[in-house]
Length: 490
Image 1 (tube, rainbow, N blue to C red):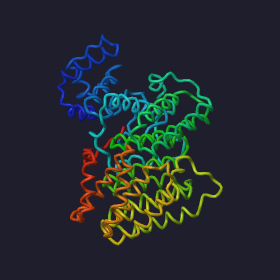
Image 2: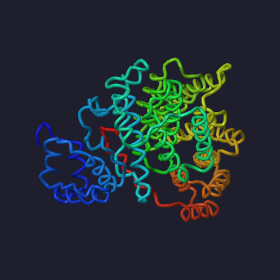
Image 3: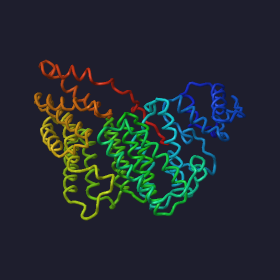
Image 4: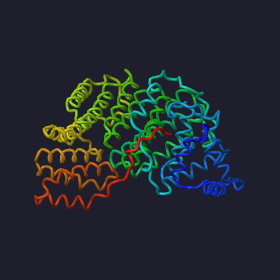
């Protein structure tokens, strides 16, 4: 290949297993199905796209994105294929394709959600792509997140209007409509807390897709800021729901979109919170070092604007990451910081909507999780995990069924480590009784960890019975590629 080759397209092309001639035929067939029967792509043209970096004319980029999405079983955007033309949104390269200008954020948001919805309609999953390392995201986003608001690193705020208008017939948005959108976020957030991310994820993605189109219109500044806020909330929720059902690379991309949208809306703390969700994802997947990279970025991006309770929440995530690394002293230091910040209060400033889910029960729940995780390295920490898990259950809002499940699993696991199988059995059965009403795959992941700990008690009749019930109830483990480290997002 020459120095002008399209390496993004080449890399993805190799994954498909197609020949160049086969891809040309598929493009012609798909274009005809989309109402462009006059398109006549051949092998030599495909070779020029890959080897010479030639950008095909419309509608070929969109056709290619559709074909690659269907073939690879995960969302593949035009940007992923390296098919942006000079002068289009995001055409000026930055490290690893990040960050992008405000106009491009709306265009990427709309394109990515549209492809995600198309993928869902075909019943496919997004586990085939690799997660980017935390350090990759940190390197690409560090300077951008700390830059003055309203100063995008390149491009004009309106340089993606054409892309946005191609996807959406933009029109002005009124305050009543934004009120309704903000209310929908609250409804979706409550549903996720109660039932997990599986049942409403597509509805959230569809709503986010509509908001991306609304952002293509030049609304008044105050309206546009509120729209960016809604976009950030929906993208963070779409990412969290995707993570909850095992669509890990898809979730990571939504977290990055949420951080961009929050920054465009002038809300650095919201951007940092979105990145903290990506950090929690990393700890869950066994990559605490990457999580700490992201948490450092989230803290630095928030600056002094974050309220004490927001900083307390961040500290609990860092504590969990330190516990996963077996760093008990660092974990305890972070949890102490979280407690001090939490009780210091936020004065008369009401918490933003995205922080209302972090209450005293969540503080104890995260303390229980961190100590239970550390107990794998320091068994004495299990007793502290028990205490916090019980306190979390006492305080837990009945609407947060998924969090209650996590508390019960943390308690059962801590009791197993602390050599208290009777109490572990009671808590495990409570979790098992409620888990069928929840679509969260993460609860099953943690239940499998608890099942592993029951092995030492397998000779006890009651525990043997519990193990058999768990074996019958647990679905097969997910197969998600999180080992290979990608270098590009969106």
